Length: 153
Image 1: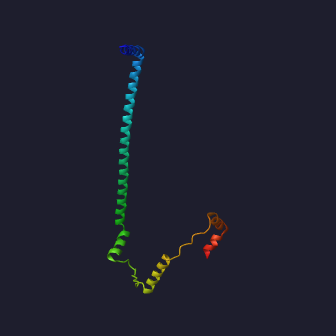
Image 2: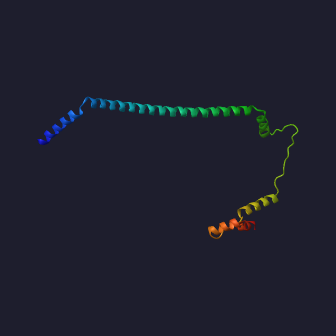
Image 3: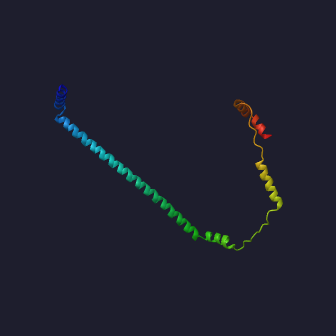
């Protein structure tokens, strides 16, 4: 009973102490500011998403413009005399006036053997010997030129 009485007294104290016009105005002002901030944040988020969509569309437009330009260049190339000349040479075997065909004989067996020997030499080349000694000794050899004389042998 005493506890209930004290809680009622405490509630009256709080009500008379804080339930003033200024407190009400402050609470309303805080509510208005919070609602304004929430609205601004949602508007900023919507603008951000719209800007992402706009940038994506601009990138797509730029890619399409590059594709169109590439197709125009190809179209101009296919219409050019150089393309017609190259296609006539490669597909039809035609030649320009005054040109002569040079037919080379196939490589001889000696050339094939020489190629094989060169390949064997490349794959069987001895690997460099790792430098011996400590890191400090290797630096001394390098700076004094001893490592260069060893490489020349």
